[in-house]
Length: 294
Ligand code: TA6
Image (tube, rainbow, N blue to C red; front, side, top):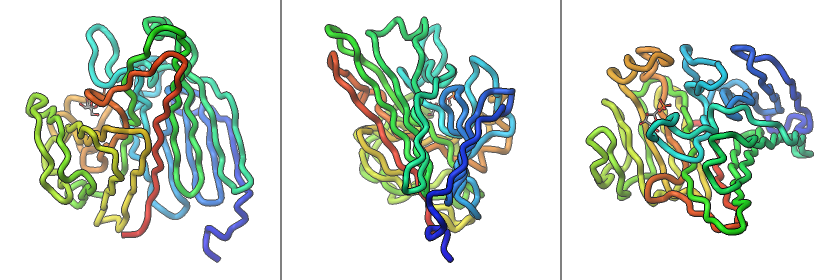
């Protein structure tokens, strides 16, 4: 009997103390298991039954208030990258989010809606509402919904799902779906280049922001015999990152050899693709992560 034909209505939802005693939701559906920390509304695990985890989580990650988790899916908002005198990649990933709702749907999927509480850092922006919906089923669906609550001022921000995918060996991985696109290469001082490869191979530090990149990306893992598919909506930027050897050694919350086991393929709106939301308007960033046999 195939897994999909199992009784789809069954699901388990548990509220547990996770690593660092941070509160965590553990969700088990007929097809998959997921773990989500309220800290950063951070998905740290999504694993389909009888398959390797889809997401990479560093063995050296911190699980501390105010610190980012290294791995899984950091939610990047309201800025991407460094910012003078502020934490890198925005404050959303280091704040505790509140659970608004948990829905166990008739099709067996489980959705959790989170809300980002007001904070001193957020006060620097026009009033906004940030909500995040994570849906766990045969695939993992994410939606970040930002509403500009101001009646007068536009809300300017960047958003991104900074997803760390697990691979068996980075040397046997290729990434397809970005050919022909312009990108900013952070490794060479943000110089602008055009992707000429049908599929990208990684054999040194890679840190690229693909601009006006709205399409699906496939991560082909020849060792695991798996394709991870990253589909997205309302996202004009794709970021590809692997720190390789030197950067891996510089990161205290990342193992020296862990660069071989992960690649980030991130869906968002950053740099020239940043968002400018008119007063009263709402915008959402959505991605669906799935996998299938190569
Ligand atoms: O998304 C790629 C990137 O911006 C890299 O430049 C690297 O800094 C990475 O994010 C990790 O950033 P973090 O602040 O989590 O160490």
